[in-house]
Image (cartoon, rainbow, N blue to C red; front, side):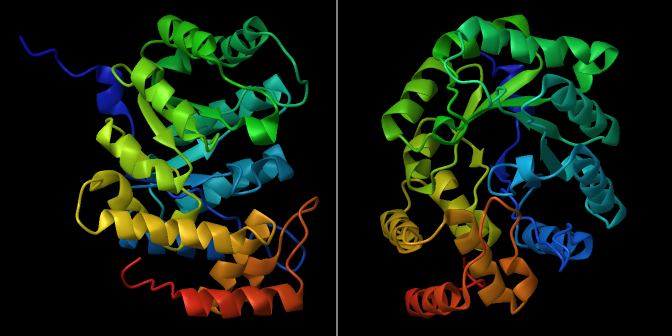
Length: 313
């Protein structure tokens, strides 16, 4: 007898939901018009949705008020709420709860949530209690929440163990739909897939691992490279065994290597500035530091030699 698909997996997002870079104006405030135009372009290129205020989007560098306004402005500028994923992650649990309530009330597809990331060396029980604080705090709105656990320990210093994931899934089976694993360790991602893919969708942020995860049942990704090459990223996970996939994967590895000489988020913004001709993309919020003119020119030279083609990528 065939086992019916798990409802949580059916409800989870599919396809590529780019981890949006956040454009800034001259005052280092969010450029809402440019952000909305970027989202519209990505959706027109086949992305089912977009993800705002994750690591790539400098999420923790913005206030709660700024993050709420950005979601509202995207919707006001024509991006359907159901095509928006919001990282509501904050160091303070009441702020994470407030942003999650706001996102759910706005009607977004779902929320991406880190564990609290200031204190290090915390026990699994403390991480479980942190998620429970937010989820139990949703009250009657909890059934409306689709939650994706976010694991990026090289940034946060806080890991999500298998015990934490299994416990939360057991306690909130209809709320937790997936895991975004951005640890960039193939063995770890495979371990999560082997342990949880029956009940949850496991997505990876490290694009070279997408074919392997696609073979194991992953159906999409929240990807930083998808800001400018969403079709190529999509093919890696949705067509893992296509004849062209190994070459496309090697091309992505080459690009990641090219970016290794720079701070990642400023470099990704440099690519957007080069492709769009819009220097506003070069701006970042402290503590990040924007590319210097010399760095941007060197990056631009390398990228033109590499050959990013928005028409096919």
